[in-house]
Length: 453
Image 1 (cartoon, rainbow, N blue to C red):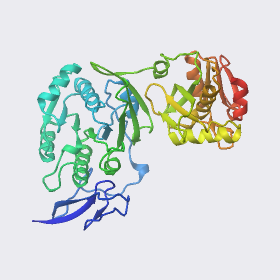
Image 2: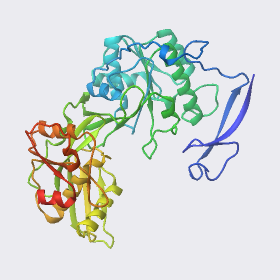
Image 3: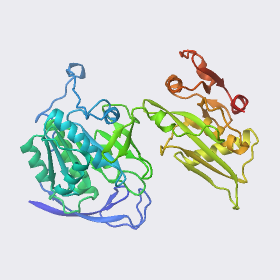
Image 4: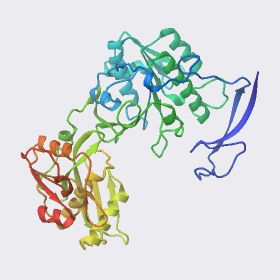
């Protein structure tokens, strides 16, 4: 027997209430509630992961085993996953429509099926023929790759039980539904319950699963965050439509480091690993122009050398504009305020445009000093030394603060042929770097200006 139960769920934050509200008390969104009718079984649904009867054990008595990870054959993908796919893990991949999520997983599924055995690719938004057209373009032709067009989770679980694949891909979780609930596919109830069922299936049968998730207009995973809490790993696939590069970023990873970064190049034949992204991002750099500075950023465990470009021009509007592409606009405004206060450089009558070349977005504070130097270089129309890399976080007092992984940044600069690095004076103590590159420590913005200008 089952009974019907009605509730209203906020589609922005997931807040649940027995009646509809005009404004959500949790996220303050207006007109965001939608009615959901679900069938609640009178008997509780038991979800056990592992043995039917468990008992507490001492962690010191638990025998650890070395888990052999599955390699996708894509070096950058394996890097972001922490060295490969852990059996029984559930991995969520989100990204904008058309960014390449299905392409990435179809290529990975092909390589995994050739190396490890059968892979089940479940497509809930495309027909089998449409998936075949994409596979022809990507050169996917494995004899162990199965494609299933199905939205009913009960049927999907039945095929998993029958086929016993090594890996399962669900594309996408928003298209899958459970018949026990009357709410539409993609609703919070359906997403939460379907993800929970797939998690139990993955853990009990030790089958790794990939879930493709849609993103909202704000760029976050739809659901809203219920999916991120359920799964083991959360990956975001990013990139600008007008750039050929795609970035796979780790947000959560129970089996590897978070904030790891993988970079791919999109070609007609699919996604290709970018082994040396620093060299690629700097390949088209013009050296003899003002407002251009090379900075070093840490993405996960990888150092990246990037070009920061700034343009300062007299404004034609009553209120000057500060525009930032690839970095936080508020951070740029803060740095401009530091210039105005600490070195009496007034650009309040100018428009300031700052850009990270290559389509990459950077939130790391270690590029602050480079952004400041690029703005000053453009405002004074002075060309910076093309062989210099600038590293450092800028404080509100104009001081240069230390950054993380300074040795990795310097070694990356040396490897790419740069001759000089300006970095925070704090790191001079205990720095173990060969003297093949000139290292200049600075304490304030004034020190850096004396070196560069």
